[in-house]
Image (tube, rainbow, N blue to C red):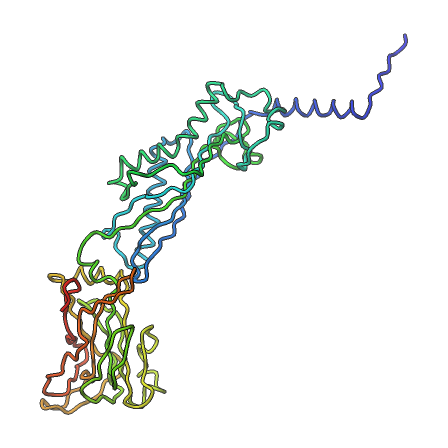
Length: 420
């Protein structure tokens, strides 16, 4: 019996191999044997502060992942709680109390909502597992060509899940703003940059997908936006941008735009280093040492590394510090205030000296030098509003002022809202 010999061309062989591979892919696609945990939410924040250290805005990125083990509300709670705690941790690192502010989402820049390509069976994806849009030529080939696509009820329902992820989260924020600690603006619009995707997860739910082939989960939403930070109205606003100048001036001097007059008495010593406080809160150090030791002995150089320190050019020269008070400390200062008043004081630190006075020999610090001024600078306009001085708090003292160790002495008081 004669045998029929079929001669195959190279093209025929390629077609056969391609068909076999496609059949294998079609048979293996949708085999869901994975055992995966749903990823925890991801949060990134950048808190912006003005020149005085007051928080004014938060830029954020949140990414939530959905699965069968948690309800959407639980996912929202976990994500938004993490967003809140991350923001509050940033404020705490700057000694700023979260209770002094209100927070609201005022802008959404981009939204990516996606679903896995499974709902009651594998569905035709719109994007590959890395989020790249898939071409029609790819989707017309196995294993995708026979999967339900647009127009199929399950496919449309699945797409609807992806589209509504952010709107559902926004509704949750609006409904639960009090417990969350922040809300959303009423006129919050939908951004132009919105992407809805059915991600290729191998035709499986995220928990069952083969992560070696489909690394990224499909059920997720990624939102970038901006949150406003508004201070709770109160006396703290009046003190925002506070600077306290404490020093000795041998001639009229302009400091940060404020004209400081010449001191009325002569001062030449190295026992005049003081910690300055406002309502008992340390805000900085004023080193008024200007004799001979301050140049070479570190014991007399405390506070010379303060940002606003200006030292003497020679023995008996001007020495002062402009202390810019961080906003976090201003909040603490006003919390300690009675009737909105800020009481300034100073306490000697470093090397002491013995001095003979009308009361006998007293050991302490030479405190007669200070010329004191306090002003508030508007962070937007740069306008300065003087709220105390400039003046010498002890100009009428009959004796040279010695400040005993461990003793705090007043250098003036003012109300930052109404001035002196």
